[in-house]
Length: 73
Image 1: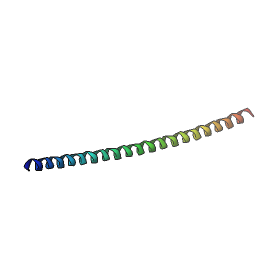
Image 2 (image 1 turned 90 degrees about the horizontal axis):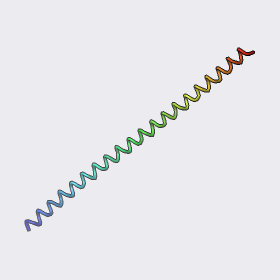
Image 3 (image 1 turned 45 degrees about the vertical axis):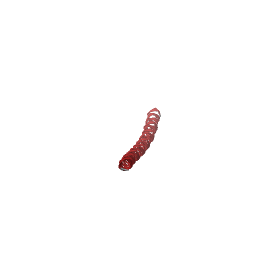
């Protein structure tokens, strides 16, 4: 009888340890999800910066083209 009680208590501790492990895994997965969201936001910001740079370069090229045309004519 006493051995059964100890076995049951050991099983309860094992189940509690498993629950803690599962909770830790859930937190890890949530942290990974936040990291992926942050990476996505960083990629969006980089894309916006590249688009802004392209518009800036286009504007500079157009300005230079106009200035060259003014000098030639």
